[in-house]
Length: 161
Figure 1 (cartoon, one colour):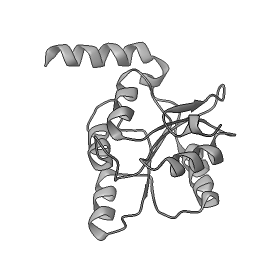
Figure 2 (cartoon, helix red, strand yellow; figure 1 turned 90 degrees about the vertical axis):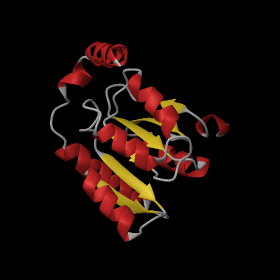
Figure 3 (cartoon, helix red, strand yellow; figure 1 turned 45 degrees about the vertical axis):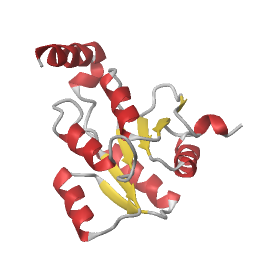
Figure 4 (cartoon, one colour; figure 1 turned 30 degrees about the vertical axis):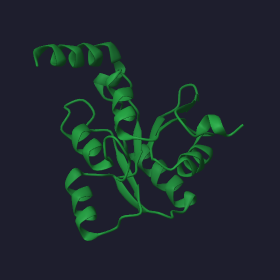
């Protein structure tokens, strides 16, 4: 029954914000999804590469919850790529990580993350942070209003390379 949430999964909540969860631990994805799915549309991936593929296929979440230690495309590389993308850089990112070294905190600050939570985390605190971020987020960007425009720009960019 819960297995469907351990890989890539979506809980549709019509008209609500979308949260992208990237964590290689199925139990963390399940916990986050269970906690957030009643208020938000939630999709989860176990690695940065799969999440990036989802993004470049004209998907645009309102918030990203990201573990830095994920396979295929690390959380650090994923974060750096979206921040320099020209398309996804304004999506708020919450880091959820077991690494709270000064170097990691500095990297996250330089990348402009919205929040940093260390594992284990309190889901109640996470809910408050998510609510605060959504309350503070301005109107949706133009690119989200027109996903075809995003797809066209991404395709054009690929063809030029």
